[in-house]
Length: 607
Image 1 (cartoon, rainbow, N blue to C red):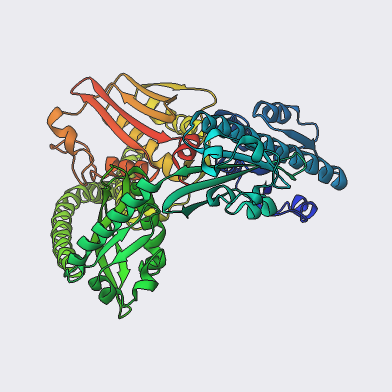
Image 2 (cartoon, rainbow, N blue to C red):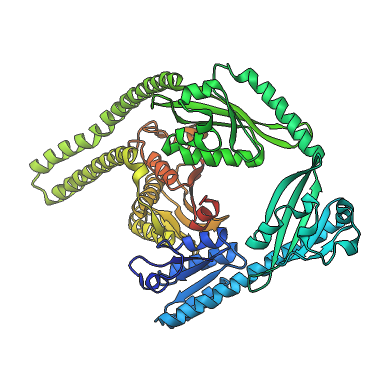
């Protein structure tokens, strides 16, 4: 049985102790959840020396998704709270630090033996269920024999197939029977103790033969169950269908595009001449899984997973990827495949073809680039129009009041003009910051670093930071944040920027009333709301409020670039979330940010 160790980086003492086992390791605590969910034959050893929030999250996720996990936990000495969470998560056993090396090894050996015994019991139960099902079907030949090959049971159909009476079969060696379906590969199963199945031909009839070994608890062979079913009609039908398919496939030999066919096992069993000319490979090189070597390494995993996903669901597939041509050049192609079904309605595999779309994509790319360039020109024109007004206004104010400040000798006047110059400089700095932020996000949004973040603390700190400017404007701030909100994967700096932009807008467009900040958990997502009772947004402006440089206050009573909400939307979407707006003129605006929690990301990930 495999062992997977999950421990914090830098703590390798457990890895040293367990070096005698087949061991895989990782330092990501959430790997414990994934392995418990996907590898029931693996013992997970989880070192709970991570921070309390991480340990709590991991235990909660295991408890919610894995009823009986193969989980062994190393717990910090005396941490009763962690012990309770571990037991609640369904752990098999736990051990507190400091670790006694020999004691840990013996504990692991005992657990592995227990799990292996349970697996053997499960296999035995499965075998017994299969025997009961087979016995109910009298048309099948059923026979059982022990590790010495002595027959202990045979069905009526077995006596009939062998042409012997029960007393001539029971208690005799399986190898004395001349009936091929009953004796084929019996020696192999006895010697190997492994299940085995094959198709046997006997006197013009075809039989599908299955052998299922039943083991003692000590791992030795106790008995073998053999089943043989007459599948002559099925084999003949498959042979006829194969001949028909191969006949029709001759029409594709000179088809101008590559054509392929796969069998029920998802392996290619036919390609036409165009395929071989395109790839430069022979039939033998391309069949089975050899064709995957021609898929671009960056596209190979995604294409294989998509192919198998559709294959298992018997769905048509259409996938675009890069494929290597015979001259070594990668070409953009579309692979289109459809399932086909045999005469009796059974699934037979897929037939498909590929199209080389490299030239078409190059043309489309050129057209897209041209359109993007036009959009950039339009955005630049709009930007220049916006900046020419919004930068000019504070700059003019600074120049005028700096001149007045220089000329006046009055202390009161100097104080008033200094304040105005400072406010205009702050406005100018805000405009420039927004423009630089938008430019930076355009370039770096895909390279942001994310880590597990307590969003409760982020929202609380933003609300408290803005409390003073809110109250200075005569507004009231009400904060409502649920306790113990789940963590999110986030860039805390950008998260604060997005919430801060919303609060800036709420202050700017509210002359009286209240500003509400809320954070709560709904349906595996954390919701952050900023609501004001200010001017509101007209219905016709709502669809465009996230457009760059667009401002609903067309009269420009407030200075701005129209980038604030654009920045917020870009940040939120980079976090895998979305943004919603509800507003009504003269009644206020509510902006809602929705972020996925760590648990929801794990539940949807494909490992």
